[in-house]
Length: 278
Length: 201
Image (cartoon, rainbow over all chains, first blue to last red; front, side):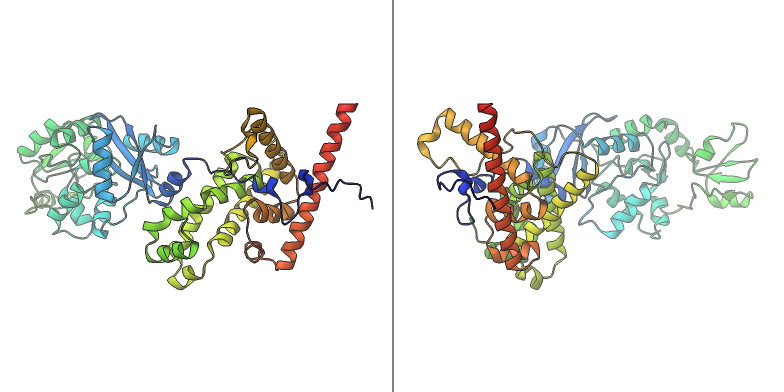
């Protein structure tokens, strides 16, 4: 075996288990953004970025668990303060949404309900989650009364609580609480900057809020078809297809039933008599 | 810096409130391990981030007794090394070279140069070159020796910690370190000889 290597202790090749400064010198600092990235990924901090919307600039906040907030914030500083106060988490400005999330939100706002968007709903009650999950089922361009949500989640008497839960929706637009309206046909409240915004958003989705309200004021709550003998909520996609000569307006489901109509399986109209709250 | 057992006690009492301290305390060493094992700064950053995210999720699922038994240094080293091995395996399957030939310095050095007259630009350049050279030599070691040498000499784990991190008896990891250092010395000398030959050729 040849052992002709130098044994001069001052050369780096003297490297031993007791002294290997050349290797110790290979330790480096981690990249500067790593702490924030880790905390965001585990949900101990959030990032946010602005997105365009029919009602102007909104900010979307997210972390590794999902989207945590959608808000109409006048400026970054006020959003950071309010978000931190509400969630207890620091929030960091990002240049843009992660591309996949950005595309998913774009598609969801365009009406594609199949696209999956994870949500960070920690600390929310089961009732609130049930309400929001149900609101997600309302198609773009349609609306449902508060009482419809209450009935569908098996809490028909909790109409007012449904209204409150929708008002607390942390991710408006992504969870389309704007598609839930009062059973008397008026649009009702909206958490994302007030009722005028609700009107704008519904109009941007292809509804005509004025004619909707006019119809409601005239006492029309349901629309039936005299060919199919099926009765729908007025904005149901099936109701919209009924030709003008076959449209039959109803004030109540009782009257529709008396006339021999059955309820639509798609929009599942329910009797909301007496449930005009919220 | 806070000792790990004080940190463990805080993690046990309030994981969400103290996890940031764990990240700050361990990120440099975990990144250094990953960088010197993988060679590529982007892969190393990813492995370090994944490691800390996994550590958080594991801690969130552990009961108090299990958290208090933890020894953070070897435990975290095991996690990051496993992620590095998976990455390295995937990369080899993809047919990419096992280490980056990019000699740019990733990250700022932890320690300032020891020899101090050496703050001249030439000395700094020399040091950068030396580090790049040693990094490449470490990257050229077979995986088992590379892991042992990096944990022992870049990270500075004790042999009991090293044995725990690698899940091997102390005698085995000691032998791996010694063998790894011998390979490094030889590789260094081979490189030097080649350089001399090229210069005189």
